[in-house]
Length: 503
Image (cartoon, rainbow, N blue to C red; front, side):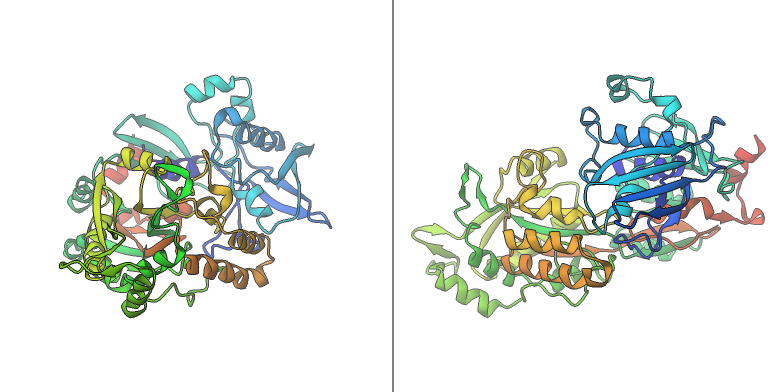
């Protein structure tokens, strides 16, 4: 099952101490929704944060949730043998101590605006009584059936087909309004769309622009359009694929990257591929964050300036076909595209034509997803059309675009490095909320001027949902965050809705 679906399910079965609210504030504790913790307090120096566990909280097997569970969870998340993806976010947490059965105290290495996010919403709290006697090796191989504290409990998993969860009828935060929810596996987009439009499924969160015409003809479906937290880009490899110790023969030149960027009309690309369901990004971030100023602009689309830069760098049009060359070498490069992304394939063709008009030739190399990922991670590429999905916090930019993200375990595959940008981003991430936006803006303007990538599109998330289902406010990065509060009127329930209750 894909990672996003697994996250959707586990966040119904297990609880955080507190969760990010729909306003997406992550630089303080303002707006967070209490979950396992019903209150918290800070020390005067902000290096200690104590969470009080709701005394009514219980695991689905009837055992009480305690502060010991929080302490155990941190040790498991930070265990390098498990390869936890959140270890970086938890690095500032030195330890968790237990002062009584319901009080878990977090101790931090240093003050940071993300402290509350890191402690409250980076770890789904796990039951120590179920897991602490199981060896780490055994947990890596196979985890036991989930015993959570969330408003839904695990019921069944038909591997490769579906996962079913049902309402926890005596939950401390109140019974879920829906009796059950089933995630059904669809291997391809057309299959998922067919399931939604035929009534076999009630929700699909991956609708595309081309599905809109059919959706409008479906009287039983609504569409919800969320801002989304992903962006697409054409990334340049700044290091030579044949020898990473050397600059790339083309993209090691900042001015050439800038000229290519100014040759691409991003607004027309977005309009052609996404219609009104995407916007041009402001940089390596998304507008869903309150720290992103939507007025930030990239390098402009300006073919006259781009042409002048090409000429000044010696890439001139001397060939009969109008293509640019320098010292007998054509201005040409290959662009990797994952074959499973129709939008990126379409955008690649349009970029190819726009750059051809400027005398630049690109060859699109379509690869299946695994090969695409391997080529990027081993830096065996000139350029690549890729996308990045951010989490609930803008700190995801650090992994993809700072010097710290370069290396064997990093995801800065283009090897962009600018110490000024690194410092500005660190300052923004450590800033208090009142000054964070202006500091993030300074960092984004720096990287935009360097053009290590062309930020192409920031797509909206299109969710198709059956009309009988009443929702609450959806969070841009997680439409499912209040799924337990969704409901269906008894008079509108279908046979499928009633099956579980009648069993």
